[in-house]
Length: 353
Image (cartoon, rainbow, N blue to C red; front, side, top):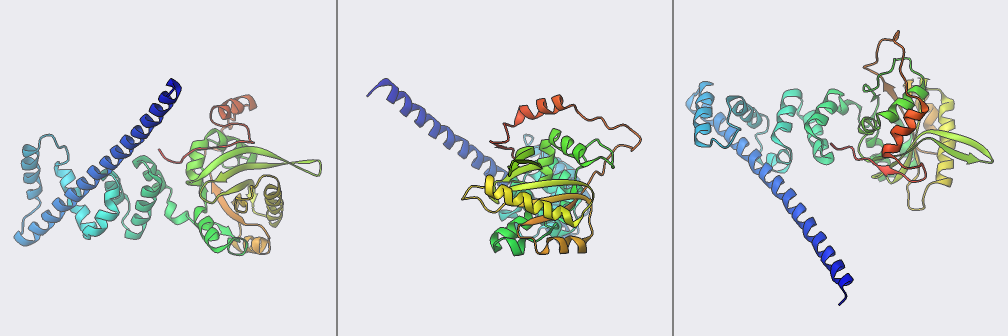
């Protein structure tokens, strides 16, 4: 057996072992976290039960903190504040089975954030499931809560039920939101669509986070040639879960019916020129400053291609009398070259942190 074959076999063997170690470590971390959450739930439940049965007051928590910290000095979770959170956790989630199956998949401080910031149980469950599904860090989860994602997810006006098969239409509709909040952009409220477009690309990671999980950036001002004429898509993405291209057009004014016609044209061209035979139909998303719901529904009703419509907001814009500082073309190209290849080949950036 040649040395090259031996080296190849060893390299393959080593990679397999490394993957197994990584997987086992991840499972071990999850198991430790799950056990810790169940322990905290048990402590909180017992505090509740004993206070109810024996009439113990709030001072019992201070005494428990001293005694448990003294007995387990290596554990940092027995402060009076944390014991109160354990009690609150047990009050909010008395069902041990739910804690085992759902809550225990999140770190303790994620659960504290959910308890502190959200009072409605259904809303809290929404963020819990999203955090588990997308692997949100605590800071990302806080950002999503503060932007009220639960009120926006799946709210875009669409014609998906008529233009996409049922499973695809449901998933596509749930993927989009209304409005989109671009409060990370330092531009005035009256910024033109090209200014918004440029600045979104500079802040591409935050833009992808606001779009949602699964979006991969393909190109800005993506060129399409039709009958020897050039056309340019504002923003082109590919969605990894929907398995389709997503065309985004930005409008700095109120929605007009002719915007839907232009989008329908772009979707037809993308389906013919870019879509692979295994891809699902391309989806269009028109982002505008404002929209009239009735006009929007009429405009999309008889379109042959799947189109959605949502508003976007620049909620943390600088005062309008301050000059907007936009990058030069050279600066923009330099920024893009760090993370993306040419439009003909694209890379996905995960929305996790």
